Image (cartoon, rainbow, N blue to C red):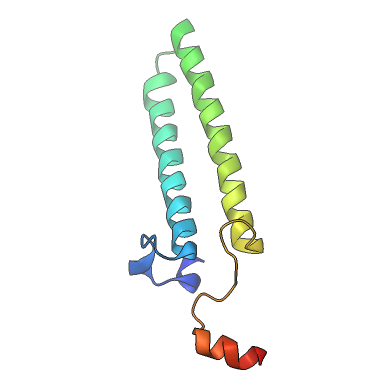
Length: 100
């Protein structure tokens, strides 16, 4: 879906607001995968009392990342916080002609 908004090579270009949202989305996805791999291969294999509290911190981190995912996806749909206008590729002259 991200390829519809920006070309692949411009996903990590933070000068555009939509690219910032795409980049944050991909960074959060990578964090989620990293936390999952760490929890699966390090924590769950050798569970003890100390690792249970570490697993709880992973659950809290997953929850926070999920909430941030939700906010970013709402910004894609609604364009409320980061996106002021839904004119990513339209030139300013075309916008001015259509409103006058």
